[in-house]
Length: 209
Image (cartoon, rainbow, N blue to C red; front, side):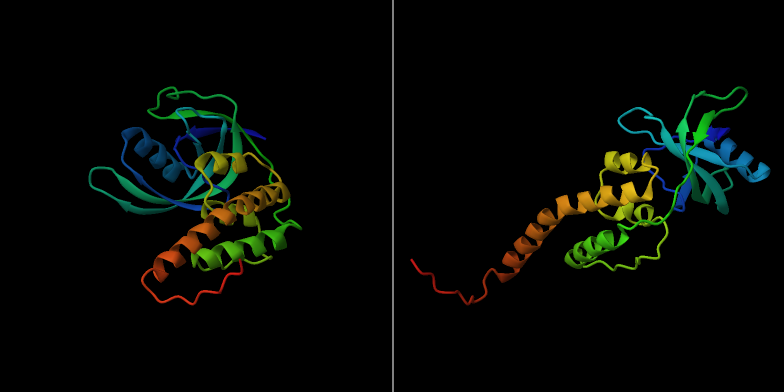
């Protein structure tokens, strides 16, 4: 499905279902958000990384105008709706201050996967090492989107995940990533333990030569 969207490029990744708070201060984006509020329309955040827009982004809905300042600035709450692929980019849109373009909305598939158990097991081990709370369960829909920002992915990896339409493939991507980082995190934990033990009496096992 294709549609036109007002566009607000940002150097970040937003996933469907994710809440994002934004402080709006530039005149072009004040105009964009005011139109979204007045006309109850959505806008798009195409990802901008490495000084370019590689093509994918997220359609956003303004859920709350949290605060409007006397000078026109705004604090807003938004939520990700769907992923899109950018077809063309117009900057600025005719008679507007902001950019826009045609996008192709990417259909979302099944939000659950048989890999959830394996992913949750790895999350549990990782979060135990990091002493973080883990509130995810096998019933969490689109689990990959919920945890993507919380497993140490780079922005390039987060973008790669954004381009994957299958929940099963996204979960396999995260499983592989956690498998790669676990040895590093474990080694850091052992280093912290050694630092804590410095200066303490140690019980050493006898060595047989």
